[in-house]
Each structure stands twice: as structure tokens, then as C-alpha cells.
Amino acid sequence: MTPLPVEVRPAQTVDLAPIQDLQRRADHAFMRSGYEDLVRMVAHDYCLVAGMVTDPHQHLWGYVCASVRQPGLAQLRGLGLIDGWRIDVGVDSLLTSLETALAQNDVRHLMHVGVEEWVVAPLQRRGFATPDHILNFERGAPTRPLVPEHKAVGASLRPLAPHEIDDLAALDQRAFPWPWQLSSGELIQLLLTTSRLAILEFQSLLIGYVCTDVVGEHAQIIRLAVDPVYQGMGFGRYLLADALDFAAATGVRRISLNTQAQNRSSQRLYQGFGFRTVGRRVPILLKPLDPHRNGQP
Image (tube, rainbow, N blue to C red; front, side, top):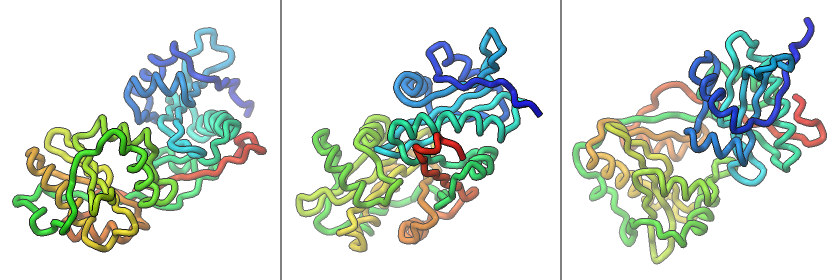
């Protein structure tokens, strides 16, 4: 069969509305960003669109967007295919160009959180490995305060000061292995867009933090970290109890969080507070990019 004459090119401002339209109406499409993030990705990150070479109106057949999370690591933020375009063919067309562009700019790995099941197998056929899975946990809001039972002697919680962002990023890098570490920019985004980010201080040192977001009757504990030097001393329980109490005070009914399947200690902590797994295991897909192969699988 003769390959379709599809051209993949960098997205432009005029493609914003067609990308959103394709996302809304296509069976196989997702975009993990709002409109402002999409505008930024088109202007500054990696956002590509596909269309028929012979189409004078340049109707979109697909799009793919990625952003750099930290030096050398990009994450897939959006992917969409017009109905009727074979998934493997469309994914190969878009990802070949994306991987080439990333590798040429010294990005050495591309990661995707496989929430959308339709894209997992095509990415695995392109050489993406599955080093881990994400487990989702949920529980109801506590009916009584938990902090009095779990308060850590000598430790206190307070808001993060703006000048402490770099210290928080250094703590996050110590607490989490690659590729789960957050950059200073991502931490600033959490600080500005979530309901609460509190840091844990002990003996005048920043040793942990917890970030919680509340939307309606649902709260999500987005991040919880303790410096490895101070793990196993009850500080994680204190942070979790405080986050649960904060969420309960807002009137939520459900509280959720997630962690990696390989992170057994975190799972034990959450299960000890009444969290139970819900939903399916979400695969983490990761592919090394070889600049000498031009993004080919």
C-alpha cells in the first residue's frame, strides 16, 4: 500500500483552534494542558501538526505536543489523530518528527504517563519501555483531626517563602529518584496554582513539604516529600495527617493521591491512613532518544 502523503510540521498560532477542535471531536486524542499552556507550547516548546501534502486548506490529521520537564527529559503533553487514520501509522508519523526534534536539542528521554489506554501499545511498539506504574489511592475525609495523633516533636509547618524555591527543588531531588524530580519552575507552578503548599521545618532546616489541591468536594494530595536523612522518623505521617486535616476543613468528601508501584514505603504509609487503591495501574512509558538515529524506532 502506498503511504499517504502526510506532512508533519511545527505548529503555528493559526493551528491553535484546529488542534482544539480535533481534540474535542476525535476518538483518539488528548491534551493535558489548558489553552494558555498550549499557546506556550506552540511558541516555545515542541508542538507539531500533520496534514495531507495535497490539501490546499491544510486540514489537520493529527497533532503532538511535548514540553521539557527537566534538562534532558521531555514529557508528552498531547496527541491526537483524525478519525480513520490508523493509530500506529499516525503515531509513527508524529513521533518520528517529535523524537528527531527533541534529540537535536539534547533531550535524551521522552516520557508519557499512559492514562489513555489507546496510545500505550503503539508507544511500546515504538520502543517505549514501562519501568513503573502509577497506583491511585483514595479515602474519605477524616471525621476527626489527625495531627494530634501524629505531630512530630520539634517540627513545624509553615508557608514557603519565595526565596526558598531553590532549596525546595534541592530537597525534591534528594527525596525522589529520576525521572520523578520536579524542577524549580514546576514547584513555582504548584505554589501558584494549588490550594496549599506547606513546608516542614525541623531544627531550622527545610526537611519536607506537602502540596494539596481542592476542587469542589474532592481534594488531591499532589506531592509529599521528606528528606531521605529524616525518613523513618514520623515526619511523613505528620505531613500526611496535616494534609488530610486541611482537606477535611474545606468540606471535601474524597481525598486522593498516587505513587509509583515500586515505592513500597509510600504505599505502606498511605494504607496505614486508610487509603485504598482505586482504578487501574497506569503505565509509565519512557524512551531513550538516540540523536544518531534521527528519532527512528
